[in-house]
Amino acid sequence: MGKAVFILLLLFSAFAGAGCATVLLESKRDPEIRKMDRAISALRAASETSASALIDGAIQGMVDALGDDFSEYLKRGTSVAAAHTGIGLELGSHPEGVLIKAVLKDSPGELSGLRAGDLIVGVDDVPVVGEPEEEAVELLRGPPGTRVEVSVSRPGRKETLTFVVRRERMPERSVFSNWVSEGIGRLTVRRFNDSTSAELTEAFGALTAHPLDGLIVDLRGNKGGMIAPAVELADRLLGAGDGIVWLETREGGRQLIAATERKPDVSGVPLAVLVDEETASSAEIVAAALQQSAQAAVVGRRTYGKGTVQTIVDLSDGSYLKLTYAKWFTPNGEWLQGKGISPDLIVETEDRDVATAMEYIRGKK
Image (cartoon, rainbow, N blue to C red; front, top):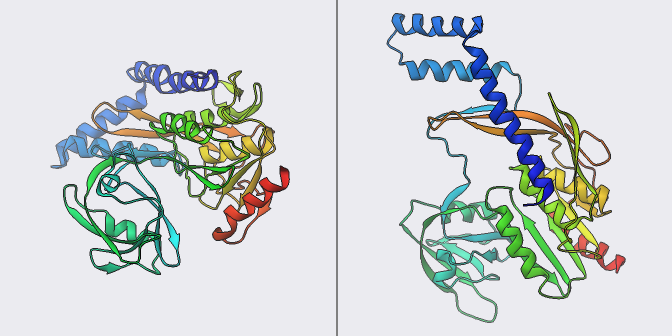
């Protein structure tokens, strides 16, 4: 575990552990807590509403009173883990169908014979040529154990190929890697979750196994997630002591999280970071760190602008509180809330993002 990530975990535990314990100890003497207890007792006596429903309503009301759009109460049965039912494909747009950009290892899609580079032209006899990739995603998903028929056009083959694939419940993969041209790799991070760290190790291993002249870090559509794997990604690309992010908590003041002394996974090559309007939160932390501490070119469109950090508090009965506990600032001390990151190279349309990043990298070689 890197030092930068370890510091983050200490900050998390200080908030979600000791802080919550202090509140619980003090609550027994708090007249406001006793007031709420009496109110719930009175409401239960006056109606047939269950105690659990009253508690849920009270917690939701307290969260609403915070006035924070990013804090929320996740009731029992709400999953905080990213997972879906599907066949394990990463898809992209293409004029002649829906492009399979990557096939997850050991997924139903891979086991059935689908390959990266195939163009999906139909799903269960529904044509998808000319349709957005989201249309194909919805058609491919369904109850686990059911089967879906996928028709593809494969380079080098004249006939349409059809595969019958069994859908399965699987975690959302967050990291993908591929080569966009000779010597230029792309690291795509869709979200930051529990599996991101291991997937980063796998992806960097694949990219550094061959000569690398430049790297594109694709954070488009990444709405954030956990902050620790985001800091780890920046740490893997920065030199020792380079600033990653400033965190400011209510009790602890402001602290700089900087890159550790580990050898970067990729060093001495030009970096470009792809962003768009949906790039937010911990993904913006990475983009800002690489822009300001590694002089990477940010390419695309202005990011969302979310400058706060949330943590999950387990309420022990299957429900959770998602609470804002800190603000974050870029290495240069900027708070991006409501402003976002302004790209160095503005691209109006998504289909020019990768080409623009490649042109930048080639110009730096």
